Every structure is written in structure tokens, then in C-alpha cells.
Image (cartoon, rainbow, N blue to C red; front, side, top):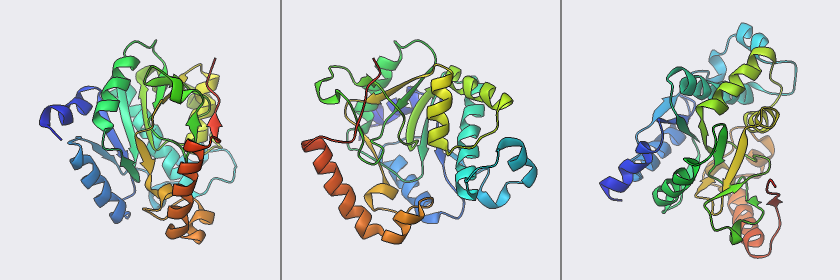
Length: 252
């Protein structure tokens, strides 16, 4: 990975954030290595670990729901990236969760995607992953890197601009949260007219989906174990890419 290519990722966004938990030492080491592999400079988001969130903050931010401590923590960590984007007046930011695995051609694909994003009107999100082997309709035939997307299926690797972040914070000023982070962004962005885009060819996988890590949030996947996740993910990836299925309808 050449120095000029590695530098390009940071040059295309105002900041890169990695959302993690201080006690997840295996994921922290993984992300240090993954970011070093691509020469990406980044900032940790360790605030709002589950055992540090006050009852007052929970009551102020969340309405009664089935969200557990881990989900509430992840929501607040993502919210911290929105605030950083707005308060630091960053044009756009790249946010990774701590289990991402980047494809070998990540830097080149990211540069092309951001070049296309430069021509978008303000108020957008770009999803870089495949959300447990979900793919955007029409991607194989797309001549552009960005495909107008349907519902966001995960929040493991996203780019959003300052207007998208501000709209979410404005929504939070009048509403309390009942959804996990990915569902929250999906629903709030739709309400606030923030456009979502997928990549025609995803460049990020989730390690908690492909068997690299045990899931920290999904008890069912944790019970089934990493070997099951590894086998299921690879079978699903082959089946859905080669035979079709699990297609997210594109926006018209």
C-alpha cells in the first residue's frame, strides 16, 4: 500500500472514527492493525461504554424499549460522531465499528465513491458494507460507484456529511430513542430527507457476521458460535451474489 494511496483516505474526509469499547481488547488490536494496513489515521470513540452511562442520561435520551445496555451504548457512541462532525465543522466523516474487515481495494474504491459524493447535494449517507450479505438492487449493472439506496441494513462502515449529522441531532432535541443505531439512522434519515447510497461493490465486511468475532449484541449468533457464523456467511455470500436474493430495493 503506497504512501500516497494511504494518505488519500484521510484527505477525503474530515475525520475517521472507530467506535469501540475499552474492554474489547481483541477488537481494538484488530482495528489498530486494520487501520495500519491501509495507513488510515483515526480517532477512537470510547465514551459511553455500557458501564459508564448514567441513569439520568438514559432517561433523557431513551424512551422505554427493549434496547439493552450494549445497544444504548452503541447508539450514544454513534451520536458522539454526529456531534463531533457538527461541532468541529467537518464536511463529512467516516465511521467504522470495531469489527470491520476492509477489502484489498478499499482505498481505490473509497476514493472513487467520495469523488462521486462530492457531486451530491448536502444531506447524505454512504454505506460501504453489505449488511450480512444484503446487496443493493441494480448494483451489477451500475456504471457508478454510488447506487441510491434503500433501507440501511447496518452501521458498520458509513460516511455522512455535516447536514445529515445536524438533522439527526435536531431530531433528538424533540424525540427520545427506541431503536438500535442502524435502525435509528435509517428511520430518522428517511424522516429528514437524508439520502442513502450503497456501493455497487461493497468494500467492507463485518467480523461479527463473517465469523472473525463473536457478536457483542446478538445473543442468537453468540450461541451458535463463530464456526457456524463463518460457514453461514460464506454460503450466504456465494448464494446471494451468484444466484440472487437478499436484494435491497434501490430508491427511484
